[in-house]
Length: 352
Length: 261
Image (tube, rainbow over all chains, first blue to last red; front, side):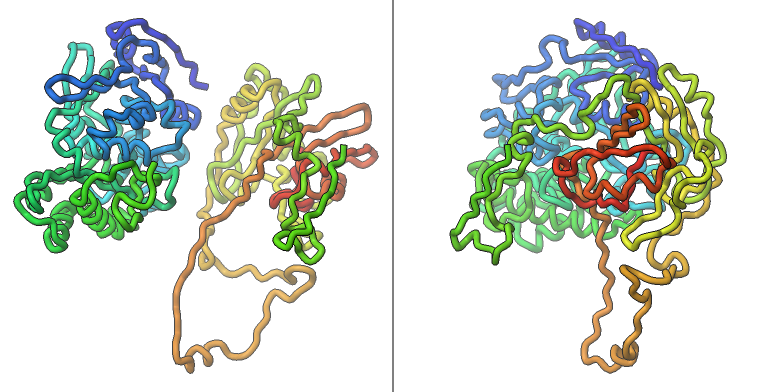
């Protein structure tokens, strides 16, 4: 039995001090952490409950065009905020494509960023897992690995990051605001998560005690509001993680792309920003040839880590479709099946 | 109060005399909709203990040791049942297949492991938490053997009969010759994952002794043949709950005994 301590600090500095001790973990909604504890995958000796800390649950739109979202804002509250939907529709769509309504009602922004992989070998304590237990080996390499990484993986770990929310955040240069033992600092979400290398036990660059207090969207992100989408291919249309997903956003002049943003989900241990592919689009008309070349560039370094060669081509096609739909314009209303790639007419048919 | 049976005569509902397609009220429908239906697991007789199965983390082999002392010494744990508890002889051999719809049962009759998550011990305790913790404290050790999975993993097992006395192997004609002559040949592999029914009511058993009478409340489609022959209950009376309430569902056939050891 894992006997753990439970503390509920009243201020952020108290929380950081309590969570800086070895074996401590922050508890917000617990929609990931509690599962991990019940399954014996995580065994923190102290839970630091941050749900009553003041000032972490606001969505603020600043005069300079940026937005600051408190880390305790619930996924559902953010996805249904009308101002948020109109400024960052692909992020709202990504949020609504993830989990279930009950989970979205409880889960927090901070928790979504830091959720752990759903690799089934990470979850099976009878299997070897270097992320759970450094040096133990990786049962996924010789196991059921259709859904594992094709980019950025290492021999130590082939797990993927499961978040949908993080993918458009990375595409739009979101920044995490963190309070730690040394005070406050900011880290680009693109830099927050780590690739496994030979230390897959560390999911992120965060240090002990580091608390995500807010998420920033820079002013420039708004300029993509009219042409952005998030698409997610998965084995069923609801309550399933991405096999591959893409967040695409473009700024158009006439029919030409002035600027593009592209990030992939389900392909690596972190959302994969495809900057070199974005550069291929600048100044071009997004025709089939251009889009195909863009997709090829985005997956140029991709390698199967197991029985998942198919995922590379799948990811290319989801990029093409996401860019096509982004270029066609953000739908007036969020689709009733958020992020479904199977709508035949962009933005029409059904609304949420 | 038994609900009225008013069969709709509309063409959309006529089904050649059967009730399929008819808007009927289930006997327990109102109770279930109101959340007042009592499922087996809702029964908590006074002094009820909880039994939690410890399951194997290997798929094939044998259990070589269980830390029974550690489980027993946990507060609230009353007993730990293992193959050592089986009183010889069982009324029937659980490995014998006495009717064609049976499955082999795992009733702690030996220390063999035949599949992942097979029950290998049962911890009985005053609370569910203590029983769960006791099961974890058993820390089983195993001699693991390579699992045999897949249709081509090993020699085929050919039973003496299938179904109700039908031959296991039937051969007609010459398939290879037919394939060779065919104008079109399709060679493909189709896979489907294991599929599970999820009835609303969880599997549960509540067993209560009243003197010599054992009452067993459990969702089962066919309670009668279920436990008497398998349990070493000769000379005891056995009463099972009214099956009308629990209803039928796949996974509740009489042959799948969920008899507590």
